[in-house]
Amino acid sequence: MTQRSLTRDITGVLGSNVFAVFNSFVIDVVLSRYLGPEGRGLYTSLLVVPLIAVSFTMMGIRRSAVFHLGQKLFDTDRIVSGVMQLLLITSLLAMIISLAGYIFFLPEGAGTFMVVLAIFTIPVKLALIYSGGIFLGKEQFRRSNLTNWLPLAFNLAGVIAFVVLMRLSVAGALLALLISNFVVAMLSFRMLAKDHHISLVPDRKVISSLVNLGVVYALAVMVMQLNFRVDILFLQKLSTLQQVGYYSLGVAISEQLWQLPTAIGIVVLSRTANSQNTDVLNSDVSRLIRLSFLAVLILAAALYFIIPLVLPFFYGGRFIPSVSIVRAMLPGIVFFVIPRILNSRFAGVGKPFLLLWIFVPALLLNMVLNFWLIPVYGAIGAAWASNVSYISGAVALIIVFSVRMNVPFKEIVTYQAADFLFLRKLFTKIGLKG
Image (cartoon, rainbow, N blue to C red; front, side):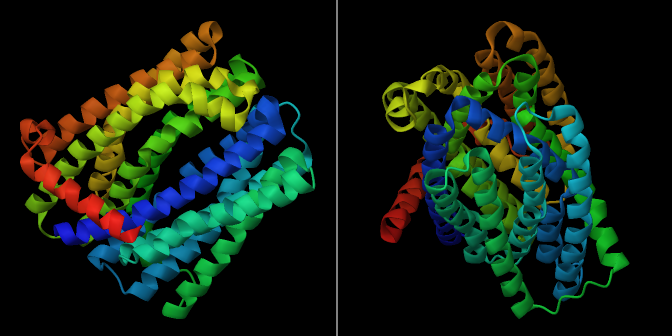
């Protein structure tokens, strides 16, 4: 894995992520101003159940597809067809699970139409996830990037149309999300159908292979998603929708600091599945961890000081309580840079079970702390619980990486002159793209 390929692929994915973040930011601003804390809380609460259902039922097929395509375990058309066959199965299963989930976690004020819209976001979201996995497995980063930023661009247009102009409130926001994802899913299908002969006749051997590896991926992804979102479920039950609204905005802002490590993780996942040079790859991953941690630490420090100014300006005075939530979450956000990258390294070599050993205990710790802290401290308590869970998981994962990949711990955490040479090349590449 050469530095040239790293910088090219990382800057491409990062550019896509930055554009996606811009659209997501504008969407957040518009929704916050037009829905208010309660409306935003209702919108977030409605989407938590489908999000968790998708994490559970997609069975890690995206990452399993990357691994199968990278390792060429079957003919490419058979793998692509198997992924599409699993899309039909998992979509139906996730929709059924979500219906059951709303029986226990139906937010106050949610109507039948809203629930239907939220449930139908599931198949189109899964379609984007699966098609993106196929593109990554074939190292088609431009197409994969398209499934990232284009839905948000269409979503922004839909929010302006349905929420701002037509005043459809939370239902309009859900409708915009559904339509935008549907359009891009159809575009992805068209690209896949052009390149591959896709059969919907079940291929048991391919499906079995995808699922056997994917189930472990799925458990790992589900645990991590629960770690990110279980606090919202606890807030919904133990606090108010207003607190959910404040907290969801704080999370949305602070998690934007993950854009660089997320871009790196995507490239690491694809490259790992297609690479045979383990030593060079581990060296590159260690360098990327060091640089990402430093970059996000600097950005977090800047965000800590500017957030009291920029948040009320963009979101309005009603969301001032979210300032303290953003600040409270920053330590955990910085440390979780490590799992954002190493998660992809272990997934790319077919060892997602290592993530379960670490993040199941971290999730249980998060749940216990949420149950204890939220009744007393509200949304701030949820932020503290996340910090403890994120930091403990990050420290444990970097130790496992050191031991299992035979990389000295000192080499992972010690900065070198070559790091900053690589960083300069990366910034130069970004400048050229700009």
